[in-house]
Amino acid sequence: MLHLAAISPLAFHAPMPAARSRATMSVELPALTPGGSEYAKTMPGLGPFGFMFDPLGCTEGKTVEELGLYREAELAHGRVAMMASLGFLTQEAFHPIFPWVDGPAARQLDQVLSTENGLFGGTILLSAIFFSEIFRARTGWVEPEVAMRTLREGYLPGDLGFDPLGLKPKDASGFRTMQDKELNNGRLAMIAVAGMCAQELVTGAPIIGN
Image (cartoon, rainbow, N blue to C red):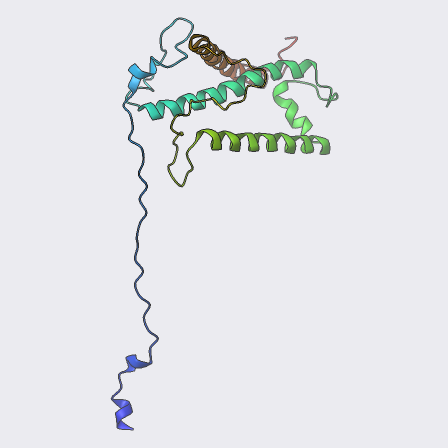
């Protein structure tokens, strides 16, 4: 029995697990290209007067890749604002799907979503936005597991290949002119929609007829 007492108590312990190696996977990212305000001046959308308006210096010290992200965001929001400004004015006078809705356009969605049909329509709208944003991300953006907030190499911001009416000019000069028009009208629309929303929320009255 004495030889059992001589056995170390550690002999009855479960074996210790082997230490896990913490290998990290490194992803090689493309080198960033210096840009800044001088490069921004060569991009489309200088404005109707031909100079760049950047009083806050948002383009200073930014790389070409960062300026591409800015342009992608500007185009996306500008396009939404152009559709919103047209819809804002149209739906106050013409909304046959929900004819009982009235009042300022900024508050009409509240009335629509208070009904079962309105909730169903809102679900369809959200689904359309959801899938269109997935398409935009897969078209122009690098997968997040590869690189965060990075556009694909060779991708032109805003160029999603959606041109069902064939309005995209074939020549470089005409395409540049079309880009300038889209950016300037989108900027104006963003300001206009913000102003219309603010006016209706403050006055509580629709824009048309006031």
